[in-house]
Image 1 (tube, helix red, strand yellow):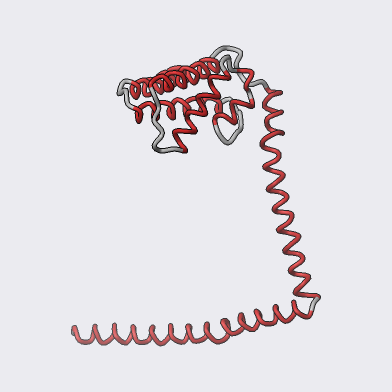
Image 2 (image 1 turned 90 degrees about the vertical axis):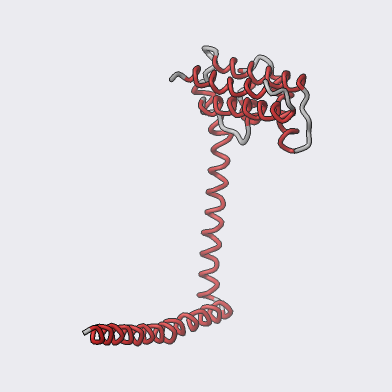
Length: 201
């Protein structure tokens, strides 16, 4: 099944919502149309937190950017205010803008170029990767500082000695009693099984 066919079938779901002519149906239609556009942009390799964020990264691809921005504003009102009522005129305007944007992406030549993808990678993905590396580096430095604190300071040695004593207590005392209890329970279980078999005879 072609991507165009899939897009058409998804848009039929949007139109089905419009036929109900209710505010709740208009809301659902706008949200579904936004999802279609979001998926199409994502398939083209455009990063972003939301549909509007992705659109602004390739805004030159859209013939009705003003209408599209208004459509996103309507969608945000729907998501942020549960009691917000959408009129048929408002729904038509938002859906027309979203459908135009979807058609713009389907046009030949609307493909995101390699150079644009590289630019988007360095603008969006690289900062995230660098933030993760920064957090890892800070965590590693903090870990090393903690080890040095334990090894080279009186307080640190006291703390490490305290935790070592707790570890020894658990290992040599509690574990020992757990093993003894396990052996005792095992013996009791074997004796029980032995007498059960003896009684059956």
